[in-house]
Amino acid sequence: MTAMPWQAVVLTLFPGMFPGPLAFALAGKALAAGHWALSAMDIRTYADDRYGAVDDAPFGGGPGMVMRPDVVDAAVSDAVGRFPGLPLVYLTPRGRRLEQADVRELAGGAGMILLCGHYEGVDERIVDAWRPREVSVGDFVLSGGEPAAFVLLDACLRLRPGVVGEAGSLLDESFENGLLEYPHYTRPRLWAGRDVPEILLSGHHRRIAEWRLAEAERITRERRPDLWQRYVHTRRPTVAASKAQPHDNEGGWR
Ligand code: ADE
Image 1 (cartoon, rainbow, N blue to C red):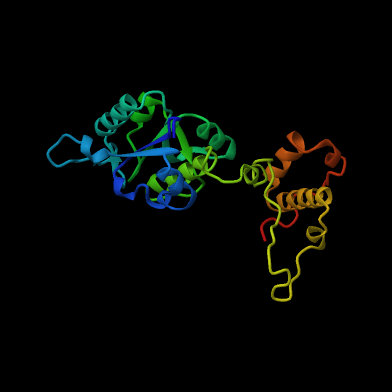
Image 2: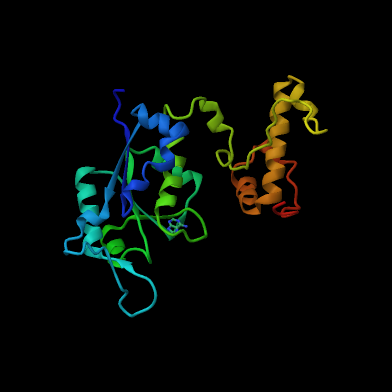
């Protein structure tokens, strides 16, 4: 490989968790092939008291512990110094909820520095001082930022050149066109008394594409009225738009 690998830097209290699941499948192969590089930095090594304390009780009282700003700052400073120009991302349920557009933007850069919080998170002054991009992977609370880092890294890596074999499969999938994906079928044709939709056996590419778009639209309309509204107003192809249905949120999740 001649091109510089996409660089993932993870600041964590548990560097042994990495590459973890990212050592497998597509991301793992791409890591071995040098398409991306990983540097897991142990935040604890930046603690300078003799107990190696990285956290402390919150001022004002209350449950949990807070990661100390002096320790986290030393770790972030070192990472930024070693990997200048990479965006700093702090994984927190308080962040902006991750979407495919954010993934595309981050994947399109040179890499990123990921700060993983634990306990109640990091002292707020770290956020004030470093202005990281605060990212949440969903409206639920994880025990730490590491599983969120796996999610964000996996989503970015699969968009990198050389990671996913068939580039076409990236264009066709959920969210890339603002829709959830259409259903897929493979052999055997008859399984447990269930057949596959006739149209898929027709060999008629244009009609198959139309059926798939119609299914993707139906599934999105039924399950995700929020995505459906955005799609109808901003992205829906004009021919299909003339057939837009007024009844939106029917059914919800099955
Ligand atoms: N850390 C804890 N919960 C998280 C979430 N939902 N997203 C990102 N980081 C987190």
